[in-house]
Image 1: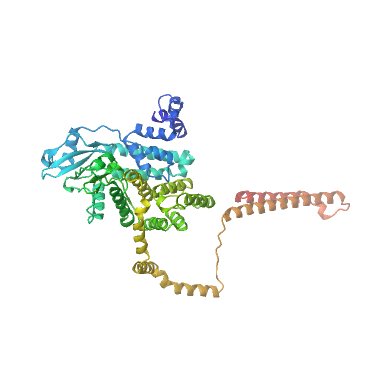
Image 2: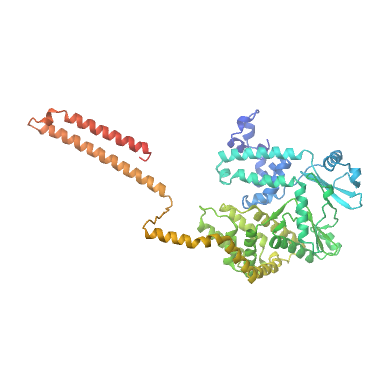
Length: 543
């Protein structure tokens, strides 16, 4: 019914699901005219909200993949909200007892029954430990793990069916996409992972008192319960409160961006959802990062390529920017390179042939992913999370300090990376690593050259030449030769028969030849040869 109400009833028919329905099939494919007053992107959002928590979370994760999903749909998916009422306090007490092995009264001096926030996977309660420390306790919704597991199985089955029946689903490898989204969602179900993520980011700033991450209380945390330090501050999007409390918004904006770039370019591990609700400010312009359910991790190679992009933008070198962009993604063999080059040139003209102060890194990355989507270029998931993070933090910064540009804050990091990359010690390390990695090949090189020389002297050098579509060419050549052979045999047969008939008619003397049934014998032999050749040609399948 959700498909039909949101104008996607035809998909049910295309997937062949109508035969599984007990009620009238036409109900699911009839037009719901009121649905079509909304855009397709808006109907997709409403469809996911109607299906419930699993699909809402999947939509939120999908909104981080602009390399796979068009921009208009991404814009709507970003609006997805968990409109879920809180579960009962009785369930809260039962879950805490099962997970921590003690009752709420045994662990907490104070525990508020009304949650601070409620979402599709869990809800957060304010509490005070027996030791007097104020904490925020996140508790997973009852039975949500089983519900999500069932929904994911249904999604996998639908993705498999879609790939078999719909060309576009097979082209985008729908099963792999659902599998990737499933892993992200299942990671959010394990609060221990979120706790470790928080501690990892906290270690990045252990020497920076201006950046804080709430402490994790591991004695009171499990996969379904996460207890963290309660921090009360002002959200960065509450501009009036910030002004009333005399915060320096310019300093807050710059520190937030610097913290994100430190995580991305220096550490290679970053908070991937820095929206205003997840970043607080404390007196002294202290930045507090919260909620580490979604993080990104860059491999050394990806970090290197993204650093190259930042350095290239800093130096305003358009050629190096294009090179870095190309190295980031996986370009398919059948891509239209001429059109891709044209699109990248257009991107360059839009964003890189302008003064540095006017460059919008977030918009540039978003445009890059649009081009990737158009040409089916596969962008690593963590890199798309990085793009999403930049877009989010840039939107936040624009409200705090409209004059600040992310690229200007990134410039010192770019200079540092540039110095480190070409420092003699770093160059020597890279050369040493290269020698170690290829040492075995270098040692074996003289032996291989000697063997090659010996083979060449003996004249036993073999060459393998690969020509695109060679098999198809040879197959067509076989067919042409077989048809030619068939025609020659047919012509020879005709000439023989005509000669025999004419000779028989004009001959006046009786010879041994004419005393034999020569025509019949010749005809029989020719027929046998003809059918033998015809059988051979058809058996080869290359007629």
